[in-house]
Image (cartoon, rainbow, N blue to C red; front, top):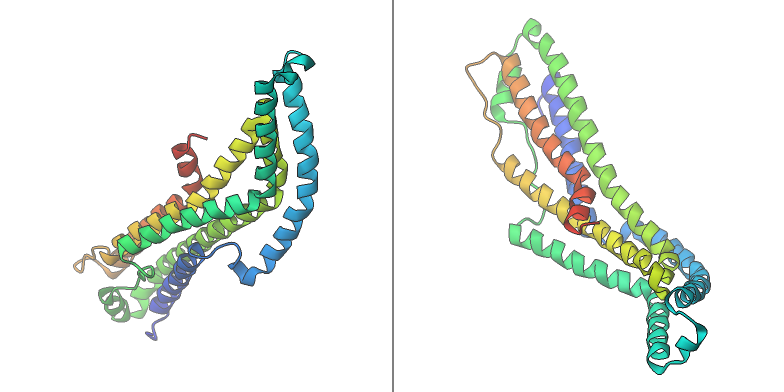
Length: 278
């Protein structure tokens, strides 16, 4: 690492960015059971199991409400075709509540398979690192003391932007795990609504929203792949310009590319919901 403070500041900021990008790449390939060693998952499973009893009670309630609203009279339920249809609905609803966790994990595994396919097709085992160009390092190191003063302000602002963007991005990915745990814990309650025909949309919407959270991982991987392709083509540096202009232009292009990535990661939820028409 260079002894120049300006260069060190920029390299430290880029190092933080690369570390967070590598962490995101690792987290995207993890399942909720593996995240943080599985300690959080054990608690979520206990909550899910406890709420299943409430889910069964609500299932009966939603089923009875559905029968009252869809059947004109009690005698109508005695008809074989109606009784059979109600029995099938109740059986399916009970199965959804009982095996809802397995259903959600299977859905997550399918989408994780899509994510792995995207990563393998892109040919990227890890995200490409963003590094400081040698031309920038050389130009900064050759600056005199007076010329380097405005560079301090430029690099402080640029480094601050890069560091903040890296933490915003990683927090978004952690937020996805937070939503996955919330959906898994509370699942028996909304899924019980499938028992009643008037309330079945609650359960369907819940599953669609859960699928949207899972699909966020695919969008995040695509955004990282696109950014890596941008990063493989470093910003153009005008070596004929002054050092301050050169560094400012370089940092500006880097921050712009990073803003595009962070914006794509932040909008992953909205993009997926638009795809699923939620």
